[in-house]
Image (cartoon, rainbow, N blue to C red):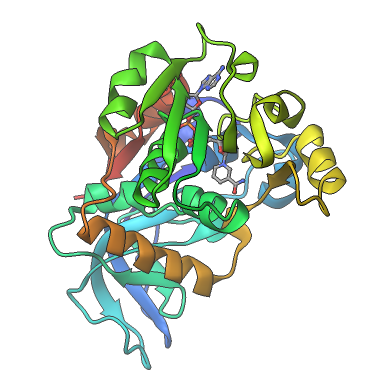
Length: 321
Ligand SMILES: NC(=O)c1ccc[n+]([C@@H]2O[C@H](COP(=O)([O-])OP(=O)(O)OC[C@H]3O[C@@H](n4cnc5c(N)ncnc54)[C@H](OP(=O)(O)O)[C@@H]3O)[C@@H](O)[C@H]2O)c1
């Protein structure tokens, strides 16, 4: 079967498609024929070997020959002994997190991992673009977002941001979005009441106050963002910087303004599985839809990575069939 790997750290050119043995379902596992899988920030980070500290896990001088991709949408090809939650032929979606392996024709996953039947009528491409629960975990669990609150999403047009805007709206918040002028129309189309161009607006210098500032891009910083937080406002940052760590610790006991960082990918499978069900509910109710800028066949994985470097609205998705 085909699988996307990089045998060196570097730019999109190090991404290659190679042949790998076909996985066989063992007891308690499921083999899924992957139809679509998103290409995102974690794939780019793994490919580039940045931040350098990540190489402690991925290989110091050169990467371990790990197949990329951390979420999948596809069809169950075979099941091992003892598997009862899915059957051969089920249309499923799920995530493998740090184990990766989804940019391939087939993947073997634990039946007790993050895998579920996907909502009727949801295409594999759209499903792959919706699996990631980063925005859900940050807004619901880390911020404890409440209806009626005012949310600012800094970096609203990307993979995490387009889901964050939709989730905040679905949960009854009012959303101000920050992205480039080029991608403003996409974000406005998701329902954000205001869209600010980061090249034209000094976000932290505005009169407006927000209950939650979700710094998806990670370039605002708590020191500046707290100026636009309400007295009980929460600042959330996705990128682990020394500042993010410092302010997280300094404001740990605070009931007033506070800064929070989280690694959503490190949460347990049961919580991720619950997020998948919650995402499915929102999709069924028409409150969440996929934003996909482009799809690429798996053989063009390197081109997809080059596109990723240029930025995109929503997600880029690899297709295998
Ligand atoms: N902590 C965690 O658990 C976790 C989990 C997942 C992801 N992440 C991290 O979250 C970050 C975002 O991921 P993503 O996939 O959403 O990235 P992305 O798709 O590349 O989106 C980046 C966003 O930032 C915007 N942006 C670019 N320059 C900006 C600026 N100067 N000011 C404000 N916004 C700016 C982009 O807008 P335009 O494209 O319109 O220019 C886009 O909306 C990544 O660093 C990723 O590693 C963390």
